[in-house]
Length: 428
Ligand code: ADP
Image 1 (tube, rainbow, N blue to C red):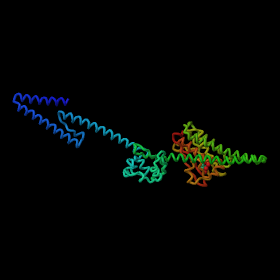
Image 2 (image 1 turned 180 degrees about the vertical axis):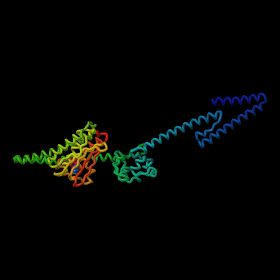
Image 3 (image 1 turned 45 degrees about the horizontal axis):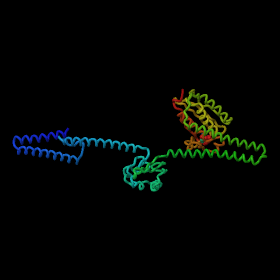
Image 4 (image 1 turned 180 degrees about the horizontal axis):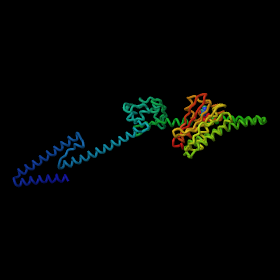
């Protein structure tokens, strides 16, 4: 122990002084004692000076070394400084990690001080609100945001609900912005991109509106006829039968719509595909027979190609998808036209196609055909028993089989709806 060594040292000096005093006289003893005290004082002064100097430029690598009591002091100082340095390094590493996590967040985060000045903001927030992460720090956020609803929201001081903000620059986005107070004076301004959620909600709203509209017309017709039949009990039987037939047609229309809606909802529910080996050549023959039944002799139905390949997929779903394409070809091809079905294998991939010589499509309609209820000619679709959901159903079924549909068409000349299946689903 260093303090003990120091005590022994001073005891030794005292003994030497006493011994010298006893041998050489009191003056010599005093002289030895004074010299020892002076040297010891000098030693303490020098070390104090070194400590003072070090405290002005404290660094773990420059802690002075010494001996006796001062060695102990400097050793403890070194330990403390090293410990502090390590704690500081750990703290700054944690801070760095938090900063990186904050910067990587997909949501925007802005830290505001008590005067709504920006203390920090992450790249997502800069992108959402058009701020600069470096240049705008220290600026008042209300002076920087260019969106009046956000300025009003911040000034209004009611932050119980998020604000829905539609921005157009740098890109069209729908943001949900909310202010969250923390730390008694500071606030977090959070922004989240909810563009896709908003789109889903719009699609959902449009869908409900479309379904209601599709059902309202046949319901009005049926309701009208029922009223007529109630008001005119003596109506002649041929008119009554005519009315009943029209009512039946409308209920059939509603039934088709409900069936297509149920099919669509089943496909969208994400149930796993029940896979089997599908004999496509046999399916093609079945489709030809069904097409002849639908056409009732008004069209020529041909099979253009029939490769002996099979498919791994679900027979009923593929039958429904191909059947939809064939029925469309018949419905949109005037009498006298030709419908050609084909099944080919190109580079190992199965290709199914339906060609018709019908009314064709203008190019601007093609990308939207698989949208639910999208029709080029609403009247024609209805008159031929269409629900506007056929190609949406086809799209879902093909997606479940990882297949792609390519539509080629010329207005007034006809169309081709071709489906390409992936290699792993085609059995040659
Ligand atoms: P619909 O029940 O109205 O036929 P679909 O989803 O099957 O609904 O088709 C959407 C629209 O695509 C149709 O309304 C029609 O305008 C167009 N269409 C589909 N197939 C053909 C085709 N073979 N020739 C011309 N237009 C077609």
